[in-house]
Length: 510
Figure 1: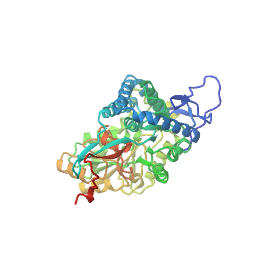
Figure 2 (figure 1 turned 60 degrees about the vertical axis):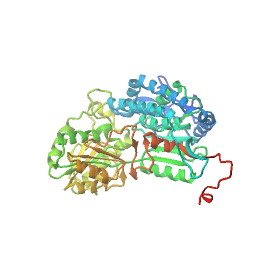
Figure 3 (figure 1 turned 120 degrees about the vertical axis):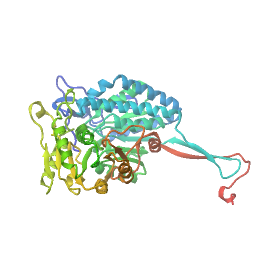
Figure 4 (figure 1 turned 30 degrees about the vertical axis):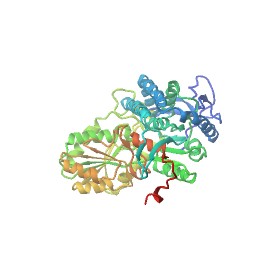
């Protein structure tokens, strides 16, 4: 993504200048430079000026995290949890304030922003409960008078690189497990949505997090994010973003012997069978395809529909989609907000053009930028439907990340599953059917990390693992404690021999 526009020089009535948080202090970037952050629903509104950080800021932040590590890892996990409980309470108290700020900087409609903050609340309380578990296990030794067990230990300094589409939820997925395990961290939020992560860090500071345990460095990916993948003081890199950038992160992590957790793209499918409740399937499609303006890695961008109900489904979906209201997400009557920035707008419109030029696909609804009235000041795209799409078309294979959905006909369940699995991604999938046998067959055969029955492809809950297969990630899962703890802690196997003799394990055990 190209760098955001540098801020203009000082004058009267300047917007607020925000700072990095390093070593328990809010500090200016070393460069003295700032980036503008504007409301995607109305680019006339300047949200604030945010640090244009560089490797120098990253260096200072990693040093602060390393200095704080010994004391934090020695803090009993239940005591670390007490801070997270206080943080969760603060987030609850400020939910509306933080949600409105998120809608202004990211564009998603207010009810979705509230859901984003609520997910951070849920993750914080859920993780805090792990402070009295962090479970290892004991197991019988193969030798007498010997105990065998394993425990979890902190990894060290973690760098967390987060996206703009869930600017508080996704940071919480990474931050809370990292903290409860006893790690310290440096977080780099997306340059489009730094304010929501600032709010999360401010609340953590007020909750009593010790100095240096959490550090936030803002700026462009190439300037502030890249150094976090190569710094020798960072032990783990956790990244959520595009597959292309994720590959670069993985390469740098491997080159520097770092643990690497990647959560990347998706091209998710809803399969609608001939026995489906079509009204429910349409409702799920509208929510999955156009919620968050299609800017979710779990968005329902492909709908595979049985040929016997295809036209009926398209008619119902068209009617429902036409009723969606597009506009500023702070308005209570709006269903779909803007896309995040000019680059995203250009990409989405280019894919709509690609779809129109692909032989056979029909632009059934939408397809244009909206510029009527106040919409001309924002990045608004009509909810767009392509019909009669073939599975191998680019619009059915590549991640568009916008309010564009492709409707693909199929003959039966086997073909639906084949089409569903026929992309390089494997994040989320769904089936609408009244037949339990069909549902179970699809659940077993779909090559995705998340699967829904009679629901959309979006709406994961924090206590189940979140992540996917193939080009969607590298096998790690966020969310559920079992999977999150495996990212942010390391196993130590311990053997205690109280036999009074030197037992030689397999050599003596013959």
